[in-house]
Image (tube, rainbow, N blue to C red; front, side, top):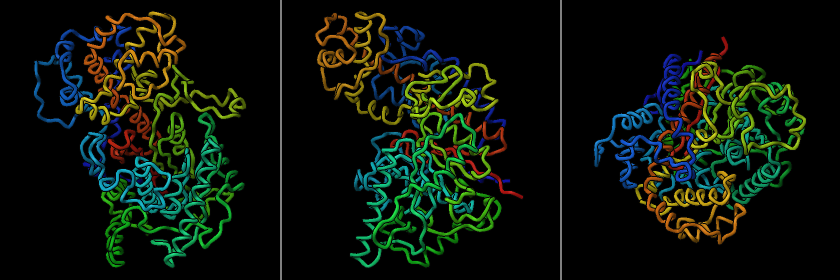
Length: 587
């Protein structure tokens, strides 16, 4: 059995019973305030949302300034709150319950919730992580640099402890994580991506990285930090992971992909094959001696003879103490043949990872982990909760459909939905989550807190769109919540300028007449629009917690312990929770 020694400062520990009790509390809270979580802020005026709040709430919240909203309602870190008036107990209870029941979003060693707080690795240069070598920063935005460094390092640590050198990165996109895992951390990686254009870019970026290493060697006589041991280049393959297909179909997909290897192919120079890169990710300016490195590695690997310690792995990811090489011995050993070539026809055991795998993809990977004997470890970072399938909405809008989707048979379209996944949550009354509630769970609390504290002009955009909705419905009562393409810098425009640009985007004339006096009255209620949206945002982490807790309970019901870790800085990467599970060691 694998045991997780959890460091409480990183992640809370829940027994099976505690997980179930938490799920009950979450569903009860969300059922009580479903009207708020299901509200569309653009309907603030057209549906009179303010009037749906208790009068006592309206009196307590109506005159708050944006910074007061941040401190008194949203920011759970505030301890000394000073209220301008007496708040009703029901409002205080909602705020407290939302804060207490939500999973913590603060990363280990993290800072304030404000998006304005600098992430340490970007203090000297906001576009370049100081903890990631330049070859892994090219074409990569700062947010992604931050994510691939932390998740890649965690995957490497778990791979070493599980003695699984093979990794499958699903939804790999342009291959930034795949490239870092392979060239930077010496793992044998296959990336699967449904978009052939992104796969083409991934192969192109691989070639550019190898060329950069070749030039570096020609200039200095060696590529800094490269080990000498060779390995295969990462494989980037075009493939759609069917959420309705069984795990053996997924494995066959991997085997087929390896047989028609879509890696970067022959290149010139001494780096035709992947080389492990030491300290390219964490300590580019380190002056540690080899003896210090060895001592650090030995300290890291001691006392790991009976279990995989996920929390220690997280600690090393976030403190920069992760060793550049080395494999733990006497720990979880992969079944199947020795891990030497993930491209073998008999697929070896592997680590499954997905960085912001969209919609049903994250839940599909969890099912494959639970059912597929080859998958030993999973690290899952979810996103786009509104795109997950539910019984009430089995085909949500915006879900990717492959060109060959018509070939999917009715039999494949099983009753396995992405929420709820667990039997326990499925049996709870009021467990249903609407599309809007799940969409709201994708908003960035930290970014909005910054806007509130700065009293940013961006706060007026929701009010503008809500007024526009009223004008649209007055002209076209049948048109409800039409998609309006983003009006650039709408917050810097007057409402009349905004309306002139926005109305044609829904098929209405730019000069459509409207009651300007009524519009001015609605503009005066911008503060109430901000308050109501903040109430919706207060429940967003509660919804996300229920979705992810359901997945943890799903794994628990199948005999697998898991941990949910705030791996990324939430101010930088709002979907910062990674679900980690490891299969127990065979007797």
